Image (tube, rainbow, N blue to C red):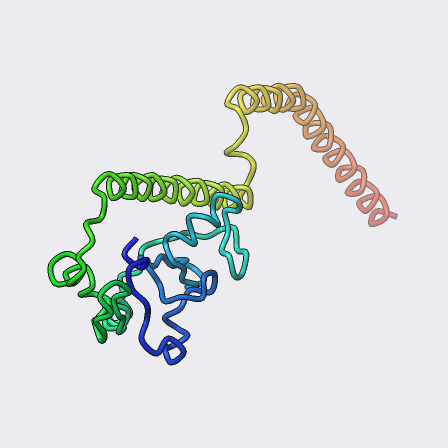
Length: 206
């Protein structure tokens, strides 16, 4: 990493909001938690998520890490002043240090290409891991949301069919009984009503 080739000017005066809470240095390739907003260096986050899949600060498990795209924040990081530890040139903007070490450094150091390729491969691997972690977290979140809904949709189709058949059979068996009771109640009501009418008629005759 290029950070091995420079040191910060007036490091104590750098805004704390530009520093990673894990390594306490200004962010390098910053990633942030899309939900709580906590931000970390890519390398620091990579080390952390190999052990725990949560935010290093609030320990939130249902989270999602994404690259920082805030132009103002990225420009503030690029504008930090550094000095080259090899030629001792000072007041170099961090965002321009790659050009310095490649073209202008009086003690130019050629960074091993193979090492760069391995670093790039490792970065791609960890980015793929982040994607997989985010997908896994999103899947678990959807599962929890579905658990709060009716369990009816989660029942196997054959259980639903059997339950429906049982209900149908119960209704089929109870329907004749219900019809008999209805007819009996109707007849009894008619008889009682007739008897009551006859009693009143006899009383009137007397």
